[in-house]
Amino acid sequence: MTNNSTSSTDSNWAGVVPVDDTALAVTDTGGPGVPVVYLNGQFATQGYWRRVIADLGTGWRHITYDERARGKSKRSADYSFKVAVRDVDAVLEARGVDRPLLVGWSYGAYVAAHWASRNPDKRIRKLFRRLGWFMPLLRPTGLVPRMTAEQQADSNIELGVISREHELGPVLDNITVPVRYVVASGTSFGSRGDEQERIRTSLDAVTGRNPNIKVRAKVASNHGAILRKDFRAIAEAVREIAALDRADR
Image 1 (cartoon, rainbow, N blue to C red):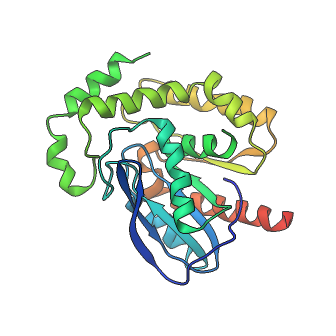
Image 2: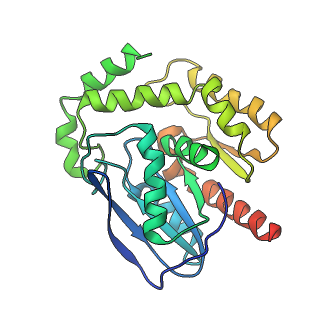
């Protein structure tokens, strides 16, 4: 999603970007290629993008980072969606990137959409409380964030609110740059019946209204496995957006 950069570094860089009360772990491959900024799933880390990055290769400038309390980033007092969007600006400014190509997965796709334009659910809280007992055991693996079950539930509930069609629709309607979705068709963890498929069909109304937004591919993997099993489809979507950007210049 969105466009191209004006600044580049010459070589690989890995470090932290201080923001508010936290510090974000950032990796930047540098170089003169199109800068691609990868926005993670809600509780994922930058390592999830390794297959997509490998498929695209060295001709691109790959910038990844861990969101607050995820991966190697520090804890914070604020894990809201609002600051997640604001943190994109902090990373871009720190790395001298003005016009990025954003690639978002899951939570990161919503962050990308909001960046490009500008009811508590008891079942979610129950799910995260149930999982809470073994999450500390998984933290050393980097598979879960350093957040309490309640904080994770709050973040997930907020995602549910901002992803509703009446909330997300106006944001997507305002996007004026090319956007390509790669849609996972499998059943996701925590969903019931055809719940995920009904959510996905809401994209049809958006793509009908806004010609900038298209579904590039619908893949067989589920939401959690898409970066692992269908990374090539995501890489192809990146290439398509970059080609469109070059044609507009």
